[in-house]
Image (cartoon, rainbow, N blue to C red; front, side):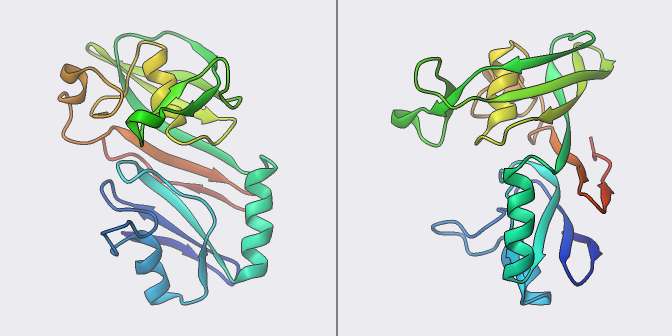
Length: 196
């Protein structure tokens, strides 16, 4: 885990794939515990899936946490992810599919046209790598597993996704090829290139 930025209001880290953002039921090691060991006033503002790598922000103290959480809730924080997906996508588009929990199969989520919460993801092609496509993803909402479910529903699951991809696509990479590459706040812009 690399600390990329620290000031009196926030801490930005580059979380590796496989590390929890917050403690799990049986796993105390996580990004928040590691950050709080160095910066005891650091508080969680948002999370990344355990399998997702990239930029993760922590607030320094309760006031900063309230302000930054309000920025996330009000969609004033820009987020860009990079993913490698199965198949060949062209151009750009918007995925607008409501999502909800797949209760019998937790932690899986699903497209739920009847009861799901509104969920939108903008995507654009960055380049092609044989039978795969590298895409930039801009989640306009922040639902659990949103990018993974949306791309799988589009027919272009993320490589290494053991929850939503077909077995051959899940096995195409030893890790989920999804990386939180940019965070844009009102007064900061952070970038982290993907490692894949």
